[in-house]
Length: 263
Image 1 (cartoon, one colour):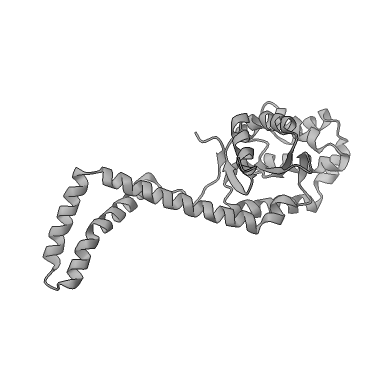
Image 2 (cartoon, helix red, strand yellow):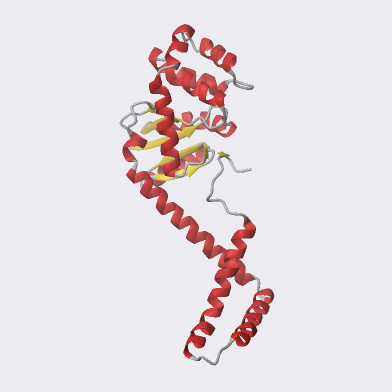
């Protein structure tokens, strides 16, 4: 299992489909010289072409590594195109990524590297990444951390995000953030309120603040931003203009930040 919770994505094609595309690429490459010859010589007819295609088919069956090579080329082209699109989208949405007034900023506000995390409180991989991320930011001392609520795992996730953002009005966002991550078991309305109580929040005020339309608007902005960037699961990190989907431990965080610092 991949180390993040995915959303359905039209970008993911089946292995069978990809193999068929690779076959088409390989077939096209092998037939190209014959196609040029056919254009130059009208004597090539349908029978000739059928014979040529049979030769190519037999060749591919006897040399299946040609198909695998074509598939690798196809995958690399797709990765490169997606990477270029994502980088361009990150550059275009720079303000939305790094300067959304609704986001909580932790770590060093003047840090030389910014880590942006899209997360969901019900995501097991997000929970797994929480302590390594906090420890890394604290130990480094020069990292700005932006937390983007991205509740994609159902109504309880959305309610938890609303509660966390509402807790900012009582100066207890991070306490609520931590408490939600440390909770064992399923999240529901009752559990969220119990977590808020344990974090020291005024529950009556929290309930009222959770209805603030600005919170729903912020979450909607995050959904829109994630779609624009190709973020299709949690957790997902943006560091140094690059998108890193999946869970992050100390080693991976070190690699991300080192790359962002030009290392």
